[in-house]
Image (cartoon, rainbow, N blue to C red):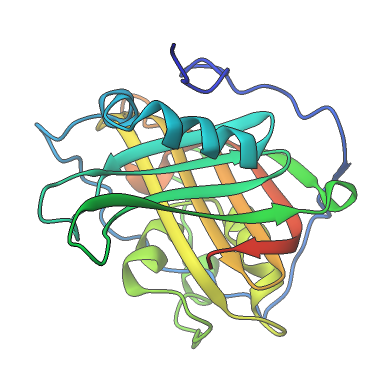
Length: 242
């Protein structure tokens, strides 16, 4: 039986419940410098990594997450056997499967989750289409702001590629009242077309996620890339294993 999430790889279903995220503009939320968005050629893509998981692990991730809005799987660099790590984001929660060794040193999977309050679910569509010669001096002036709430340098670099509005929406819950416990990203495709692109931040009380694609039209560069994203935010009511 195939337990792949019931969302095609090229589909981004509209969210049927919840309110739109407010447009947030605050000088306290840093806008980061863009980091590398290179591709690792020859690395297994998400479909192959997902299929390498057992049916039991996949089913549990889907049970915890509910209706799937986005998912990815990739080889875990911390695992000596290059087993896969998987993340499923849905209307009920964010669930994560990570390879581990049990007390008998046998390979197992640890499954954890952030479960959501469905009433708190918010989302916002972001379409970013800068002109070919558009500059970003004002944006870069905010990228030097100090930011110490659990975000790694590598995640800052990935965030820095996103439109400013998306960066603000993703970081807003974590700036003042909580730090980030967990974060990760995934993308695949080509240098001029990353599809899908996903990045999440998770804290004690909130989870944010961006899902979409990046395109670099002819004549453009990464700094003027076009983005089509859905940014999600949900309050956490329960954590399992995190």
